[in-house]
Length: 203
Length: 203
DNA sequence: GGGTATACCTACCAATCGTTAGGGAGATGT
DNA sequence: ACATCTCCCTAACGATTGGTAGGTATACCC
Image (cartoon, rainbow over all chains, first blue to last red; front, side, top):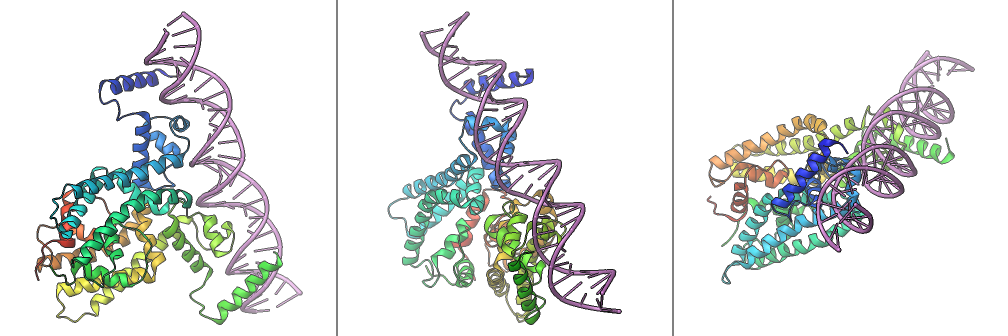
């Protein structure tokens, strides 16, 4: 070990002890670096060596904290939707009982976007990189994702039944607007999109 | 050369001669395969060998048609926005002179989405894969992209000045809603988003 | 101070990446 | 018939990928 490495290590160790001890573990730094790379460079460009460089270690050292690259990616993606999920559900829970479906939808939108911005690397990673994950990894990540999407589906359905969204507009179009991605079903979605953004609306 | 390869080649040659001769050249097949891969698997997963396999040739043969992988990717991405650009501008040109900014915006939305669906591989590629392109390639592709984004900026500005969009809503938020991606500026965008989708609106 | 973990290192592995060199087979023009 | 052009092939190259093996230095417990 070189002298500079030793200095860096002891400095980091003492810093970790003096301040928040739960937040800056070696594993967390790796997750942060991976989240940033997934967001800005994509899955395949998120190499173990690129992760290591951002953390300030060597690639091989990653495997002391995680068994594989995909394990790290999976945790980042899932944390991304999990944190937004929590933000939205707790925002909805904080609403008074007499809140209308529209109030709930608006609160959910706000919570979703604010949380997305706060934990932007993790959340952006789960939105932007998800579509390009290797099929197997995408399947495992889809579980947590579905759990979140279901919240919106229910929200949209309530708003639709209350008359806030035109009956003939597919709810998928509206959901797509916010969450992005997803498979494209029909070209009906085009007119739906226009109607949601600028079309007639009652109440 | 094996017998089956020879058969396939002569069959393809005669087919190309009998039907449309300009559409199914070897180069076009490579572009199609690249577009599909960029859309569904992302940039890094779009390997020369994967492209070749979809076309039915070997990786090395690609270099008879294109000088490099990035040349192919660039053409696909640029064709993706070019085709939508044309669709939107011609839809706008077809509008009567007395069309309101709102009419124009709605027509543009429709043209954008319909065209996106028709040439979905190329367009989706340019939207979904763009963010993860290598920095240098992204720079060259940004030119054509900007040209298209400017159309929307003007469209939005006209609609805003005519009062269709609340004054205090950033136009970037609205544009993001349709075109996706882009860097995230402030958290004001969150409330803007909510307001666009469900907020007050006049006219 | 000895022993056990922890956290990192170097050095390598097989696989895969984009790309190139050189050759073979069919079509075309003369 | 011969040369030429087009299109594709095989075989390899250097670089880079995810991952492994084995060693080293620090920190903490007894």
